Image 1: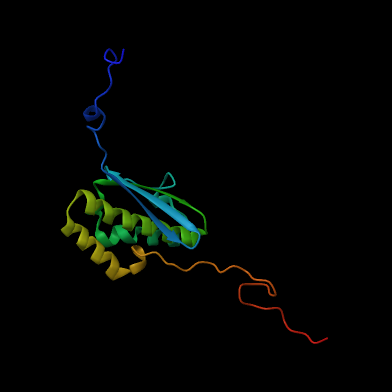
Image 2: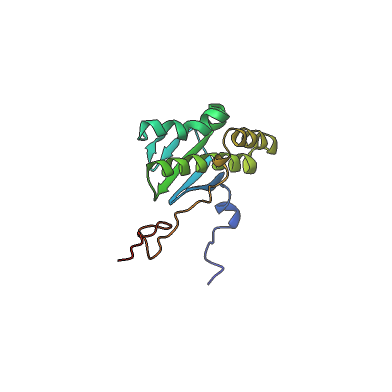
Length: 157
């Protein structure tokens, strides 16, 4: 019974392995996941091209990793980023971190160690937060006041 059925061999299904890495960036409550794979220089955030991202002033923050490393390093990879949570600014910082970490991870895994080290040194020299997450989080509110640290005014009568 089993001998008659044709099972696909493991070598057939694994023949076309896609060169891809997944990285994340975090800032406050925003989390961005970047999917970097071999391609033709596509750069999208939540399905939209990076050039259409609003607000315009923060768009340059997302372009920082691309401008620092140079467009020739990005021309043979596609980067798709999904981002959720937080506000505009923290989402932008999470996206730029995910892109930077993604390109470093891709070069480490599929290109060579030397070019990965060059990219990493360039990014860290410009801004450490491009590769290292900011651990600061919002402190929870406590009783006896209107915030995490502020207390209600004391009154004796």
